[in-house]
Length: 273
Image (tube, rainbow, N blue to C red; front, top):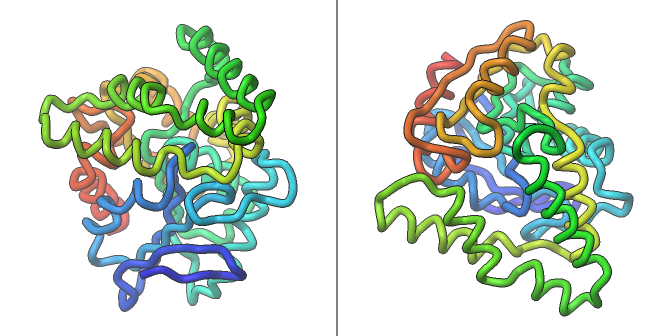
């Protein structure tokens, strides 16, 4: 069910449930990406907003940096007027926003869940060269006029390269579903300038920066084939938290929300109970 809070769109599931989970999606995603996980969590009230500038949400009036995303999230959660502190779940880039928020406003949450968290700096290690190429890709988009820039960023070959690389399942039907989801929603951004700002934020920050400040009960869910943050880095990340548990899902990478949403939901249920 679609709702709005001070004009900001969000989607709700299971309105009669007592415990609330607020879910924050990843970079270039929308609320649609977390739909399968939400539908597997029938015992909880689920709230999934579109991040500012993505999907149906208006962009921020200020720069799309981490501080401003966290400020937006603080206003969003406050505006919900929930009877008790919710659980906050972030996937991928959403894990950075969620972790930063949890470090700053722990009293407003009951616990934290990070799915495929960004647990290592994108500008370091073996992926650094690819990250620099991606930075150039978004930089070039900012130099183009609006329409050519959008076509450049939303081109089918670019989206498909990303989708094919990240999908680990061998199930043809599921791979087709994943590619369709990316082709349908991956380019639902407001404008190239805000997307470039958001990308800069995504590669300039990681969960590790906030882990030691977080004392909340925390669950990390990782895929053992994740190319964004390798499993060894996820294990190191978990050790930085004061009170964290790492659950590893086998034979899946960064797309647990599409490939193994039932296993993600099961881990969430067990953690909460």
